Each structure stands twice: as structure tokens, then as C-alpha cells.
Image 1 (cartoon, rainbow, N blue to C red):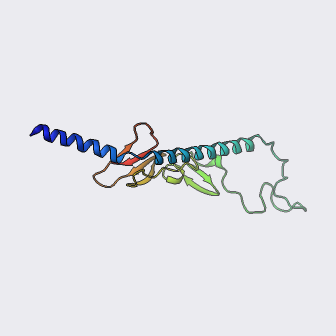
Image 2 (image 1 turned 180 degrees about the vertical axis):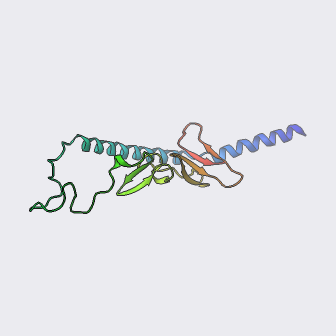
Image 3 (image 1 turned 90 degrees about the vertical axis):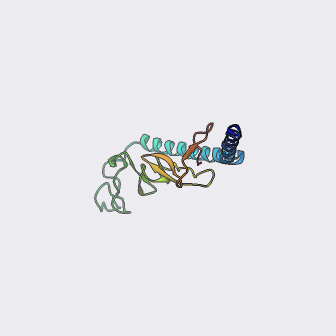
Length: 155
């Protein structure tokens, strides 16, 4: 009788692992999305490097009209926002908006790094101090795929 229960328990455990594992199509889609995000990050890094390499403009040349109107260093579009170097390290300016890289799941840990959705559709993504995590329903816990650590799901 005990062996029957042990076999039944082992069968249940094996079945739950098989059902919770993502399909190959889902793994391929996730890998493609990760590659796209990495390409966007590379482009962003190259753009910021080019900005740093440009020589500084002549003093007072920026923001002055043809008659020399307006204070130097101020564009006609309005007062400049805080420079990115003045922000605390956990904040970043993304598309003109200040984002918290510790809590925003669309910019988790770095600008434009989106926390992935749950692969089995259970649980809600969130960013915990710059680390992507899932809030799972009661009774379930976050699990990470054995071979692909970027894949998370509630099991």
C-alpha cells in the first residue's frame, strides 16, 4: 500500500514538472525577444558613447537666437531637465521621463530592460530592487527554468 502511494506521488511530481515546463516554441520566442532587447541595449550604449565623444560646443553658442537673445546654455524648447549625471543611480531618464530602475517592471535594473511575463501565464511580473520577479497566487511559488535562468513561471 505504501509503495502504491509512493509511486502515485512520484507520478504526480513528474506530471507537474512536465506540465509546468514551457514549450520549445515559447523558449524560442523568449530567446528571440532577449536578443532583440540586447540589440537595443547595444544601440543605446553606442549612442551614449558617441554623445560623450563629441567635442564641446563653443561657450554661449547654444540657446542664443540670431540677436543673441536668451540665457546661454538654454534651448528654445524650454528649460533643460536635470542632467542624467545628477540623478541618483536608481533613477534614469527614459524618453524624457524619470523612471525608477528598482521598481518599474518595464525598466527593471536598466533602461528598456523589460521584466519577462510568466511562461505559464500564472503570476504577475514586478521589479524588486532591480531584479525581475513574479508575484504568484497563494499556494504557488516562483520557479526558474533549469537550463534557461531567464525563464520564470509559477508552479
